[in-house]
View 1 (tube, helix red, strand yellow):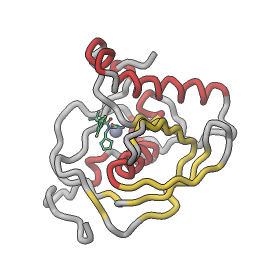
View 2 (cartoon, helix red, strand yellow):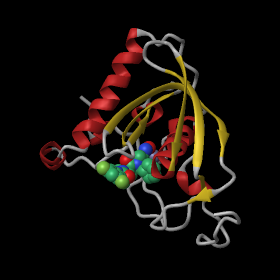
View 3 (cartoon, rainbow, N blue to C red):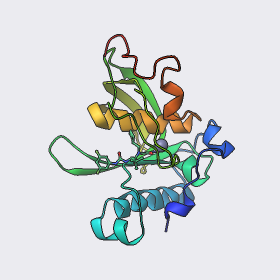
View 4 (tube, helix red, strand yellow):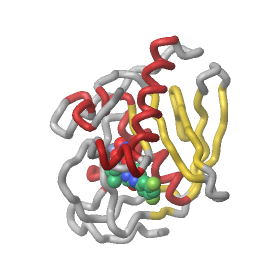
Length: 179
Ligand SMILES: CC(C)(C)[C@H](NC(=O)Nc1cc(F)cc(F)c1)C(=O)N(CC(=O)NO)CC1CCCC1
Ligand SMILES: [Zn+2]
């Protein structure tokens, strides 16, 4: 069962690794690991369990955050109908995106970062992602708004990019041009 202690914090080189593609269809091991990552997110969003085990309410977790050099991540999102969606993507790739950018005014956080960081993280407002699912099918999915931000945050992890890499060094609150 993944707990906060299993989540690798910044400073560990694996968070700066471009992770290896997984085989498609995903192996039994890949699927077990993905299930554990998804269970962590569910536990972390459960009021009792998150309090009991001091879990930060997670919306996304990439494999390298638990030490696995694998191109896969789990996300637990609420769709625009308010329904919880478990997203398990293998070898995800952004294949198209809006020109419009968005950002979270309070900046982003990260399960692997234990310090508050200020500054705008420019993200595409909409993304289309190509990936493989647990059944080994190639899928194309579209996200917008906060859910698109989560996808981009997790795919960045798989490429060794941390959210603060994207904050403008000279002016952290510089608005991206077409936001
Ligand atoms: C770093 C942390 C604050 C734990 C963040 N959680 C989060 O945004 N929780 C949340 C937000 C909601 F809107 C509704 C809800 F139910 C729970 C998170 O999981 N991540 C994922 C991460 O660190 N992945 O590596 C950071 C987010 C910042 C922008 C997108 C993902
Ligand atoms: Zn993160």
